[in-house]
Figure 1 (tube, one colour):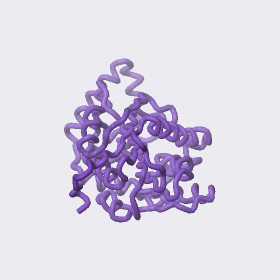
Figure 2 (figure 1 turned 30 degrees about the vertical axis):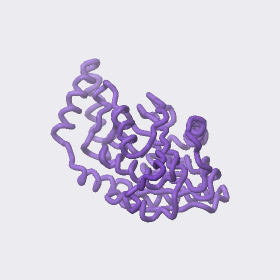
Figure 3 (figure 1 turned 180 degrees about the vertical axis):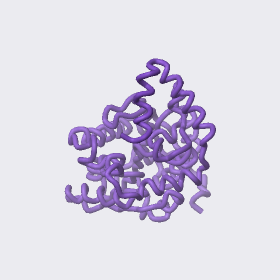
Figure 4 (figure 1 turned 90 degrees about the vertical axis):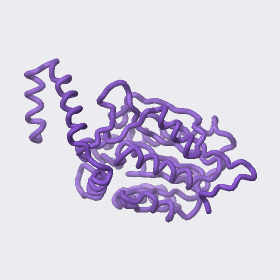
Length: 286
């Protein structure tokens, strides 16, 4: 038991029902007084995801690690996202056939083992070399030889755009936006996704969303302690931002509590890249 747990457990027992309101007040004060800059959180994120310890594999959803020692739980994550993709296909306007899939943050390959067989190439973009190696091993075990790993530093997400070898028809990102250093960082990744995709290309993006509960707001301090609670979004604002970036949002599916990783609340955004009207030049590609 760590020092904080040793203090909190007896305090919760003594205070009883009065503990939770007191904890919420403490959290508010910490968020105000310990607020960290984007640069500071970016540096902490880089340090966290490139360290070597027994916790990181579970946090990256490796097969057999921690709670994912339950094989059915691990497989259920990718299977659920594949089912969501099927729903997206049904609603999308003339979705293109898959040649290349890009996943931002493939972790241990829970999505990759279900999605990679649908395409010729599967691109994994990650800040952790260990994650890319683990994902590669999972795909190699399936005899899939079209994996393209791209390692980027947390501070330079745009490097991914320079290293992807061709356009993609599908962009995936699950359980990652919540651990990004800031909301703007997440929007930058969304802009990169739009650039990577072909016209009418699809994106399945999962974020944590803000509810009426104060605890769901972003906690911009202590990256390691607040992992999974660092960045969250207002659903309407994220939808509107996606439109500004160049997507046509198709649907959003809410999951208030995820039984597979015991976290939440999550919002899955189903997006389609907007087609450039005929005769209009997209200056971003110049």
